[in-house]
Amino acid sequence: VHEYELEAQFRCGGSEAFVSWVENTLELQRTPHVMWDPTEEFDFDIVDSPQELEALIRTRAGEGYSARLTAGFCWSWSNPRPDGTLESDVVVGDWSMPWNAKPDAGRLAAGIPKSNYWASDAGGLEQVGCVYTAQGFEYDYAGVIFGRDLVYRPREGWVGQPEYSKDNVVRRARRGSVLFADLVKHTYRVLLTRGLRGCYVYFEDGPTRDYFLSRIEHGTAP
Image 1 (spheres, rainbow, N blue to C red):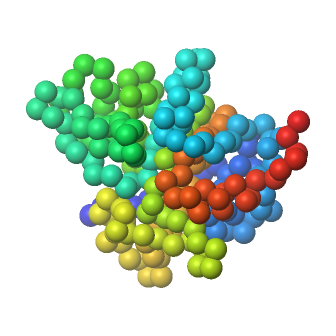
Image 2: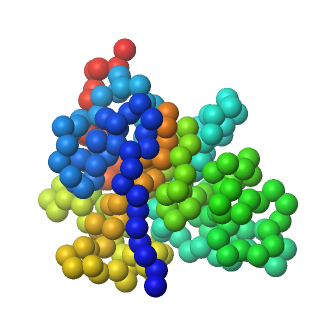
Image 3: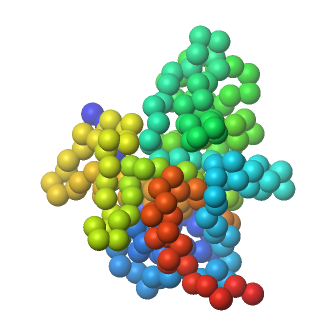
């Protein structure tokens, strides 16, 4: 039996406000933080491409911080190739990168960490973490690819799109009134709140990006 449990701990060091804002924006609960204040001591930015997202994460890692990329479960998670290398499953346009190794992966090629070392081993910078791996870790900077499995529409609010999900556990899950969209909201809450110092996000869906941008205060940054 697979359990889909996502921790509810605050993990953004020094920025409880960011976690509160994420929960409000995803409509997980009402909080005092309706708008994000860019003057908060937490580095949040929305970027224009996965290439820019990867570059930011690599820059932070090069500065000596721990930094990792994660994504919503919108791409298949392949087994390692016979030689132990990983398929580049996460594809956005002409950008691609492998998921982290599966927990039950056998022999892996040199430089590819086991899933439980993905966040701490330097080789983890070369893979995208999924929620089942990332939920147990925290790091200084989080880069998140926000997929099309959860989108925001002005007239409907948050809409789950299971046809874009590759997470069979979530697609099958029905616990009372808990729907697909609610589970995916919790997925993105986890991914967005792994960073202790900052979070950068690339949105595949334009209107969802616009909604997040509309909830950021303007004219407050120094």
